[in-house]
Image 1 (tube, helix red, strand yellow):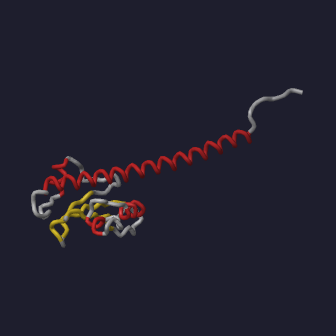
Image 2: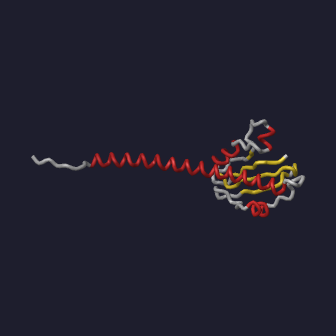
Image 3: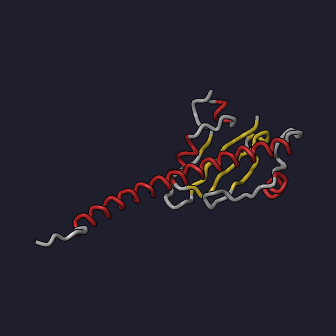
Length: 154
């Protein structure tokens, strides 16, 4: 009898199944890494914006002179965020000694993350003795239409 060598179809299907499982796991890990990177970038950029506003307008008694294009030009960064939305600055209408940083274009899960994140230097975080994140947002839209607002100042 002649003995044949080689791989059977079942062995090949087994190898392909294992490779498929590994590929699916790798895609999940890459997706998680990309989401984490975007969130870290937003955190760093919000801190840069807050520092820039305080340096530029810190000598005034209030933030009523906030102008988005002037501020972003002066601190040398774009108003675009990693989610395809924008950062927006506005004076708090109830207290001109406070300003609001808005992050637009967020998905529902990212909005919920930023609302619950501890923005330690924000007014809401400080007034709650660290029990609340310091941000607000409705987080109801599934299509990247959510906005988070963080208030800073006195």
